[in-house]
Image (cartoon, rainbow, N blue to C red; front, side):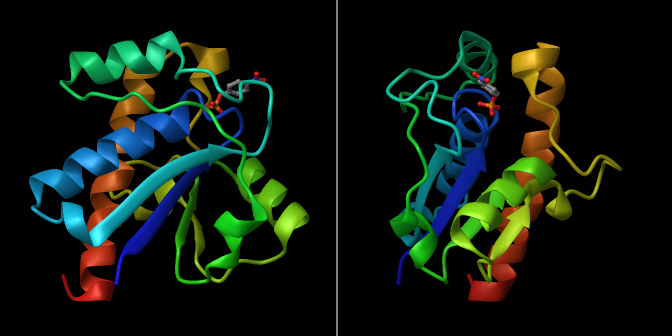
Length: 155
Ligand code: 4NP
């Protein structure tokens, strides 16, 4: 059975595309590509159809990661599969999802899986412009998330 992992932020141009790309690379490196379906979406529609933010594309390229996704809005269908891992970047994204779709049984903030930071929310580089710091936080969270999923799914 395919394991669905959906990363969610506000605009789906900065943080969740970065998480999608980093997590995909970690999964590929682990030889688990065919076990996963990895995607990202936003709770706001301002940037639907656009490429990721230039800052996200630049930081991913600097770390040797390709990404060609475009922004899309989260759908009821995304939230309907109770087995999917719904991974939000901050508390506000989580609240938006709960308000719109109700409680999902497998919804978590990315940094719950981080071992290296006391931050609970991935700060939004759309406002801070600190893409390198966000990259490090997201990488750490994605590493912990993959470890957790591997344990839970016996991979
Ligand atoms: P993201 O950043 O949620 O990490 O993609 C944002 C991108 C755009 C906007 C807000 C946050 N915006 O208001 O347009």
